[in-house]
Image 1 (tube, rainbow, N blue to C red):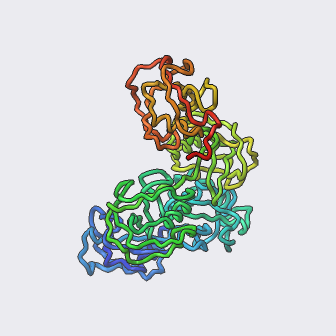
Image 2: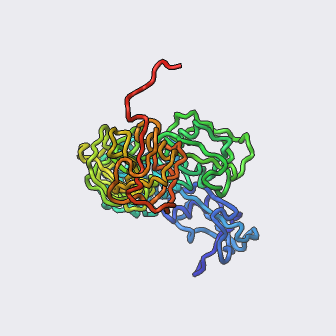
Image 3: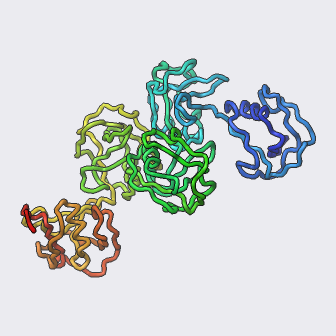
Length: 504
């Protein structure tokens, strides 16, 4: 007012005032008027007049005002407002899923699905405060709209605050029809404190993220959360704030999913929890991730595959940038990207092509591409990535595949292992990972000959129950100074096809 910004008292701000504010900002209709400084206490003065809008004004300048206020307000009574924004999702069953429509010149219209991808979807989900984008859809997946097609050829970088800030031709200029209307699915759930597919479970209700009580979260709930995030199946439900204590409120309802729902929005809920929970009881969840590296010998190296609509498929190397590999390695917790190539052809679906990441994405799915299933590719061009965490064993110079000198691939370099730093637990994991049964004998003093190159500079500290040496802890400083005269060897029980039958 004049040259001074002032907050507004919640007791003197009503629905008609809200309609005018949202209209003036080009943000559609009001969704919710919030009281008690819901968006934080403002600074400076509280406005000394009361708006008395009728609701049909184009701006608040045209609204009558009353002076003085009927109530005595402080910044603890600052009014907040949520408008419908200039974008909405319709016919998807919730406010966070559906056909994309934008408000322009007072009229809602659709967005053409030409080139519509996950970066575009991410902007809409963030604009609507609906969590992360789960799927970018075209071909009128949520049914064809009507009226104008306002936007076509949308090209977002992914960092824009609103869809209107993304690149596109002029409003209403398109070569499109409603059978191609774009849609998206945003996630009403997120996993915090881990990776895209693991972390503390938080659910979105209205504008607020809340944690979930571990005593009221079961396997069926976990299946729906992992499915909604595109993260495969649940691996483990973790209790007692395993991913740290959350902030804000613990959700006051209990999920009662059957396990076959596509989103938690469709799960029944009970309005009263059976347990009294605090953030000490925040539930955590580990899903099986939405990207994997296969046929490369370890979980940190191999052909790139993504999980989409319940099916694993490959990624075409055409048009992919180097930062895409960086995103994959970080998403898998596998360190930095070392190399990328295409020497491991897969089968089945080719899900994405021309992947274009800026390097900051939490998951490969949030990078730009031609769209799901859109490609001109074959499996000879399936992308492969090697990360710095790529680690696998082999047994060399022995008489059988399951016996020989132990060597470990770390990144792209094979190294031998010091006999003084290799024990029975390490041997069990190496034999298991190679599919060679149980360890029979650990041999020191280069029993299978002296290796070449370097001796591995780390010490394996396996517990013995790991499925592969990647999961074994390591110590970065060896306790012993080793040369190739101390290369360790190993004989596993799988070195022979012999077996004992009908024993007592």
